[in-house]
Length: 307
Image 1 (tube, rainbow, N blue to C red):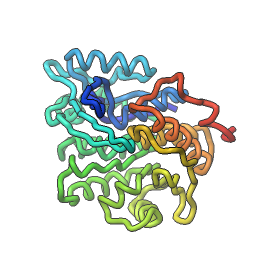
Image 2 (image 1 turned 90 degrees about the vertical axis):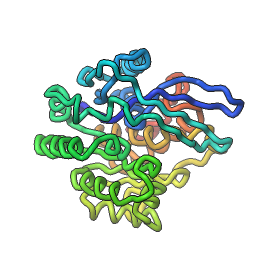
Image 3 (image 1 turned 60 degrees about the horizontal axis):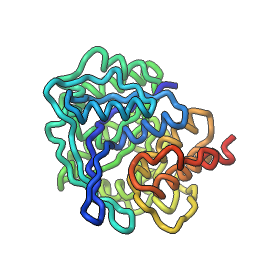
Image 4 (image 1 turned 180 degrees about the vertical axis):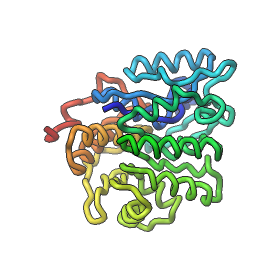
């Protein structure tokens, strides 16, 4: 099945503890798209690129990961958004963004086209995140939600990772709650993270998040709980193997989502899919960066006992 991931690919400035910086590229939904492709899933990425050198290099990365970006518009005279990331000794991250004028924000606005619409309507699975939703103004969100509704009517499944970032949405969660509620009503597979759900909705435990997300309209829910694994029912969790501690937690949830979705599309049940997600995420956090080198990925371990 073709998976279309929607969002933003940004230039990434990674700051090391010694003050040096490395330039790369990243973005939550693109990270998932890249890992989906690595796992053998035909994947497209839908965003807006500029015509600057960074956009050119970003598209080289997209191609190298085997992800199709042919439906993504190119905005003349525009440049990619940028973020800087610091990683603590314990592997936790802190972000600073420069993305207010990023061209990706106009995907369903100024740069919308019939080709963009067709990419959404022809997908078998559509994947996006709360960060994706933050990108768009009210009119763009209306257009996006209309397309998602029509795509579902054509048989597509919608997968959504809440990935709530209060720094983007602002101190008042009311707007984010309204937008998320509209999204969850269209969601078939919800890939939540408890820390995010607790921050946005005030949930006291993962089981409460699970029950609320089901009540809000999601057909299938996974609540990711970091080192405690993932909850796939209000009374059932899938544990993960604990390691000595993460090197870098960047893309832990994004990679989990890729393995989980791949397993589900291959017909595996939720428990086996969550195990695959835990295993891939465990490999990713043992290395620096969102996209770890292919040579260090243990493919057999991801799918151990899956077949």
